Length: 451
Image 1 (spheres, rainbow, N blue to C red):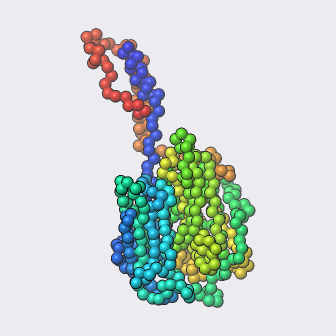
Image 2: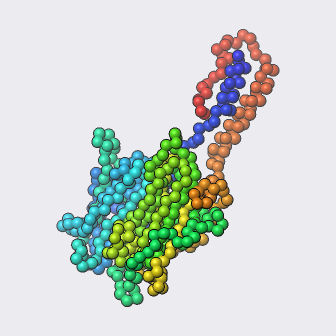
């Protein structure tokens, strides 16, 4: 019986697979290194980036001094830490008000619209145009309100999350050679021929950033590959010139299915923000572990889109400069997912005819650093060959090197199992004293199931 009990214990240790370790939480949003901390009631002295925090039910107000000739965009990035419990209506509401409290335009709502924590952003603006409110120089209030719900039973605690504020001043439009090109009257909604074709079949590797400040530069058309961990968002910046459209396709590869073959609604996301951190558009997909493709197609970038844009997505394509792509994976996904990003930047025929694809109009000046080296260490480098896991013929991102601690634990486990098996072979040769009680011969300790 002793031999049977010991054999069962050894076989249990060797035959029961170890439970996979929970994936580590992704890195949180990285604020701008030169951001200045502020608090409610502070004066934002001028263009730049500022940091604060905000709670549900709280109102933060910041004073800004505006002249009478410049367009101003005031943004807020709400960035709950990865893994934080969130509600679909959690977020912030933004408004710009005169010193007397009159609104300078409609309020902007920035909501999570999901239950996975991720950075979300948008802006309010003061545009200098005849017939619009708040045209006079003076002091105004930029107001940020934390919104959400407590579930109706009062048990949900109020949150407090990181808040990054952006202040951008845009010169008034020029005239003559300095005037931005007119808005195109028509453009294609279909990607150009060869979109997403990659002659190497591998694309270039990219490591997306945590937000706007460390977004990986993706310069020009091509295919880039990355990998998303559960609950993670990654950001990439793409330069868009006057008259250019942006076609961006995210191809999420084969991945582990949710437990019980369930599905995660809106488990995959592809979002786009403009240079002033204004929301342009978003696509969402169902996560089942099968490949999914999400496609964004914009209007050509044109200064006139701010007044002539028929939709919010067209109106948001009002700048030339760095646009930001964000891909996100639901926190409940059981494992990492490979993703391929295909980009195309065709120019509209109207702008190309004028030869102004790269015209440095006034709206592009605040973001003149948009062009990035396509061969930078963050943006490119060949991805290793791998097994295809993407729709449309992509290849999986290279697997990371094993964690050295986990490797050591695995080696130790194999060594222990080998030693136990060897002990069975010599068990019959070991002398035992017959006088020991049955109780003292029982194995000590507990064998945890699934260890």
